[in-house]
Length: 86
Image 1: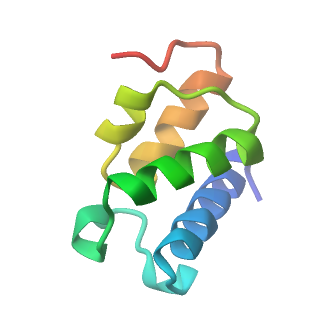
Image 2: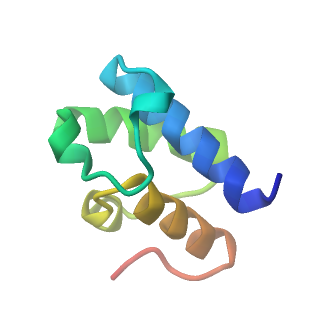
């Protein structure tokens, strides 16, 4: 399993847990808002992802990530030493 796959699995599991859904029901490219995602879900997930993935994410950039795939890309960008700010 690649690091990207591992990050995607972590992101998917956290999002599913926050939404009270099964991870299998969270497609990587689905708009999270269509799954019931709101700002409170986002804040809870942000805190958990920062802890789980050992990163510090910019709130605005995190809110701009609308899918699991976009969140994974943001985490990878931060891990590569790039700013998460737009």
